Length: 248
Image 1: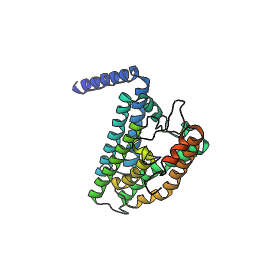
Image 2: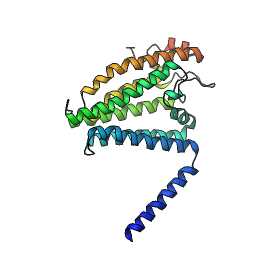
Image 3: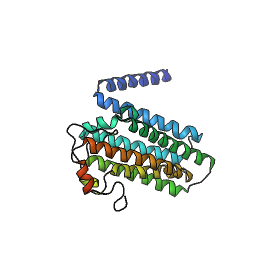
Image 4: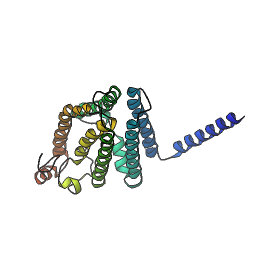
């Protein structure tokens, strides 16, 4: 009888949750569904290669990554609905240029490979990482998310895909006053922090093949923006550096 009562309560909660999701704003529902599926994918990518759930590095990284993305999504849902809609259109299928479809596919492949290889490195102890280094890696991941959040607060057109909206303007304030592609600067630090957080030194080497892909996207994006966004060529003259101030 007790077990039957528990099952009935769980079934009722499930029905109520389903009704709540179905009744909510379609954009918010899409964000929730994508968020849940993303977390489930991360659970598979992290703990399946690890072969165990007794992996505190994986849980800590997953918690920080999930909290950062959920917090970011909630902020956009409340304060910047258009940007949330743009950010949800992520993936090669949403790119207009064939070059960007290829580039985004390679970036996603590198991202997933970085997670899996880092976990395999931890499991097989190929290049052990001290606990404090893993925690430092998580700090780097968190700071990279905070920096990316700062970028999106300045630029509401910072979509996941490369396209120019009809009302889009050149942004030259905040981080954009220093470098032309601050979002990619944050992404590089994310790639640095992830393998360390997951307990791997050797996986940092994946940054080497990742950088040419990132630079390809960056340079191709600049060509598109010069072609389609009025004032971008002048902005390039004012802000000389792409990723790192006084370097490049």
